[in-house]
Length: 464
Image (cartoon, helix red, strand yellow):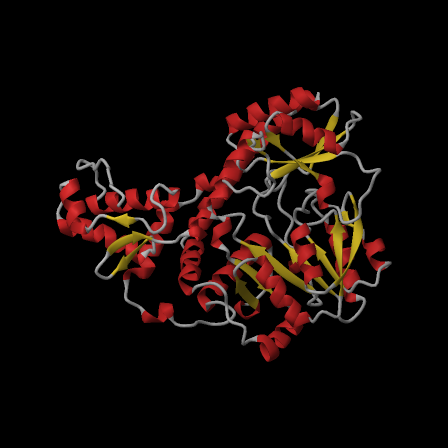
């Protein structure tokens, strides 16, 4: 029989039975108590530890319910067979080994970052409490498959005021993330289309289109975005674009190019433009150009947006605005597909929009990101002789194009050796271009200003 010796802490908030349970569980997981080994009876354990028998019984009951021990009638308690739990341990060991091998980074300039320290926790708790205060059974019934009308109406009002999008609540569909909405859109459009993507592009959308069996074609860009003359030379009938802040190059598509793109879509029936307006809220120079959808008079633009960048990725709240011809197809054939966002979450964000909290949050985050943007630009000045900064006036990342003879791989490796993770533009290209200028992306949303200064100083040393 295994004799249990443990030091119980009576001055701690953790109940005694939980301390006993945790101790035995740990010994079974670590192998100190072997499978099949007999444990003391509850009476013997209570006497040994000088606790009540009910305390010992509670600990054993918890271990029994989780499968760590087994009870055999007339014989007692035995450690159970838990081989499955041992397979979980190498993952932690692997993680620790990777850190020991130097694979953990001091600073990560991810372009997909969002600063969650600025998340409005107090407001979110207040709105959640207010919405759940009343016992409203309607909150937990299935709602409108497009999303709740009040929330869709709030999204419409916001899009019109902030982005110049013209739509009605009936055209808006709410979904848990842009991936879900893209898959729903593929049901509405059908897969008998060829989609043109900007090159370089947002690879997640590109991979998703391919996994949905769409034929795809890359279209090169110039300083104004997707080249419409090259687009016209393909047989694509759908163009996927990010005109407000092209991902990843940061190009803002000017009005002339937007009108050319709309003209292309109007030249043939069945042509559409998917406008992904993923982070239009963050712009640091000049007045934001209204969404492409606002200039669409032929109902050719499918507008996608999200709250993931502006509030938090885990919110998983995105929206799609369908032109009326596609809306009719959706209503006739696909209205049965239920919304993937809970009514409670929709109501929280609705109140967040309607009560002015979202506007205040955006103003706060714009100021925060602008300070980090300016700090990074200033800290990169020592590199001005060997690289050019671009894409820096919007979003939460910028790009450095190098002219010092170093390859993109060499630049990334040198940064990695100093504990800094940067991202190469070549990873976002559909067609590899050996002649392309070595370019790296630096995102600054996840880094504090002091961290940005320190990291940029290190990069100036290893790249200079």
